[in-house]
Figure 1 (cartoon, chains in turn green, orange):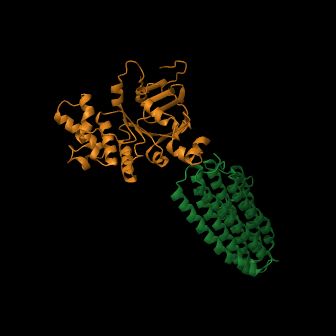
Figure 2 (cartoon, one colour):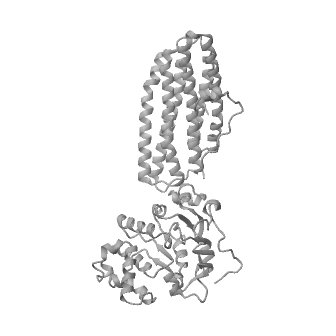
Figure 3 (cartoon, chains in turn yellow, purple):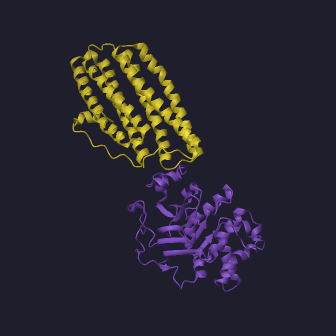
Length: 243
Length: 280
């Protein structure tokens, strides 16, 4: 049963829950922003901006700790039941996952100084679109959490296939580029890792979506139906975790 | 007493949250007690409205709900304690081992030995600890001699987890024990007549957390030997001790199912509101 948002008799419980929701929204917003900044830094070879992303990740770590502490405290003191319990368990897990999303953004930012020949690396042109979709998944999964929206959570789960498809295309393009331009292999490898990071961000957004679905309905999310674009066995083997 | 318009098979399940997982008769054989379409009136006022439920041998069943929801009233129907209230009227069918407990031939004293009861406030007799336990077996003629009676007293106190604490002072007054010990004495007294079902009406509400934990542990140990039904205001307690939970509201049974389902994913909004503390 979806949380109808009715207030608890004990108002302090509601204020704990609202504070947690606020912090989850904040860590989500920060992670989303970190992805955008890291990608802008990459496109513009902006080392200062990249350094800022790395620096700001510390705030996400602190926020995750605060969310975990308050969740733990609320479970201990309020003995939540039913949808309240599910929501708190989901909050606990989501904070960890979203913090991890921030780490992937930081990892992208760290690679910015190592990718300098951006004009020569053709596959890089696909990355902005991929990151846009990955960011949208993060945003929508957290919107779904804020609204207890199981439908939106399902949709995020389905849309992750687009990110996976992007990754598979970039993977092929990078390999081709490496074969054609052996001297770019080092930088192209970084590019591939960046694509992989974005692909992982999409996966983590689906993890959030799955928890949202559970919190809202009390049931595990039905298995995702795989997309129509079959990948080659090599892609499957190399894109571990992409599905 | 009986409303023949509304008959159900004894093992037909009603108000189950999910018949696939909570249907009766899945493990423990036929239900120990069944209630079908039970209504209770106090004068003109209807206190229980069409309640049907099964109580199984292998699980502890908790009745929860706000004050005045009828859970205690319903519990008291299960060994005809409501008979003592002149204006109370019970309709519908309640069976124990398939036997109609409201049938004219039913011996109520015998019924209450088979369906024992433990109350909110410990109510030992103002007699010795020994006599508190021995009273029931004596009047029901369960022991032939002193030796046998001694055995019943010891085993009942053992099963109630009280023997170690009182074995050297069996002649002391039952009322001299602590509240928690008195409550365990009352449970031992109920056990002494070898009941099939034990009804507990808020057995821990007058006890401190340690005494409460001992009663809960005792309930856990007694599970399977007796069908146990417990009425409690403490939802954590219901969650801790029961395998099945029934939520009552305004005299109706709103939801009945596996305790884990009721407390993690209730089907009914009213249940959800009550257990999460949204009930106004």
